[in-house]
Image 1: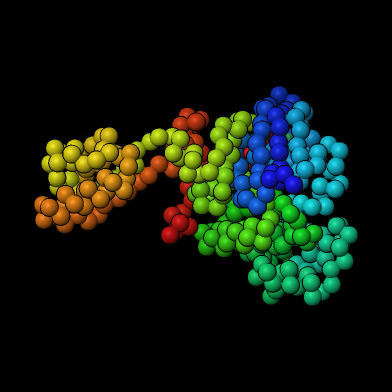
Image 2: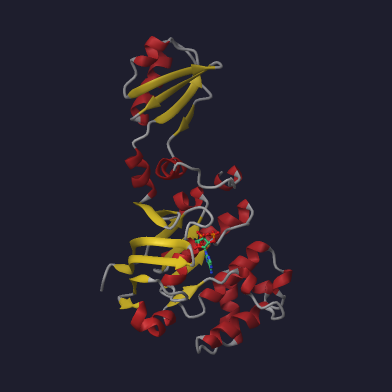
Amino acid sequence: MSEHAIEVHQITKRYGAIQALNDVSFSVRRGEIFALLGPNGAGKTTTLSIIEGIRRADSGSVQVLGMDMATHARQIKRRIGVQLQTTSLLPDLPVIEQVWLFGRLYGIAMNHTHALALLDLFGLREQAHRLPEHLSGGQRQRLALAIALVNDPEILFLDEPTSGLDPQSRRTLWDTIRRLRDEGRTIVLTTHYMEEAAMLAHRVGIIDAGKLLALGTPGELIRQLNRPTAITLPDIFPVEALATLPAIVAINREGGRAVLYTQDEPRSYQALMQLAHERGLLLNDVRIQPPTLEDVFLHLTGHTLTNEVMPTAALS
Ligand SMILES: Nc1ncnc2c1ncn2[C@@H]1O[C@H](COP(=O)(O)OP(=O)(O)OP(=O)(O)O)[C@@H](O)[C@H]1O
């Protein structure tokens, strides 16, 4: 059995004059959470829908679970789950009936107990007889996930699963996604939240303007950037003393703060603490800022990922 759940080879896609995808290739390993990270219009949804067999690429090929999408779409579709956009929920159907309906589309006759058990997994038992419009945003997203699982899929596709959610709902959904992957499923998601890719995904593909620009674990992508970490502290040491600290590549002093740029944060930090100890100075309010995926994105594209900043409460 191939270690890859998905292999995408050189896919391209045009919509009239718009080159939505340009020679995109990557693979997704079995059992990983893979995130396609990019801004609006980058080509994330197009990529996902081609892998799901909803759209066709103009050229290139896609293998899913060892089968070619061009020849085995039916077999593949039985083994994957696609999270609907919540706007695609049927407005007049109570929650539990939505689950039954999608089960029937897969030829699965779910009984009441089975459907309730699925809703239970997503904390939706009490909402079973409500209409979608009476659910919160987070509950609607969880219902869409529950529906994507009716056929017990091996691969789950989630298009911007936490878009528009508040920080608490977003964290809850991250936990749910991790649990689904712990059950052995492969998860492919798209996001334009840098923190979401960094915290949730094993590997990330960075996509912009239809091109896949980089691929790797968040740690690898950040390390390849080879940028120093910034250590900000009160400006209480002479610059000559700071310059003797190991691995420091630059020092800035401004507005009562000193910023040390280091290639080896643990070594520099330890030596800094030692320096404070030797001089009998108390060192508090020290901030450490390693480079982030946002820096990687900026470096690759020359522009920022998104104007929409995730509230920091989501990270606390
Ligand atoms: N059906 C379509 N017809 C014409 N252009 C399209 C169509 N679907 C997408 N596009 C264009 O193709 C490009 C890629 O769109 P796509 O939806 O794949 O990006 P995305 O990264 O998923 O963005 P978003 O997060 O906004 O959905 C965009 O320029 C978009 O406007």
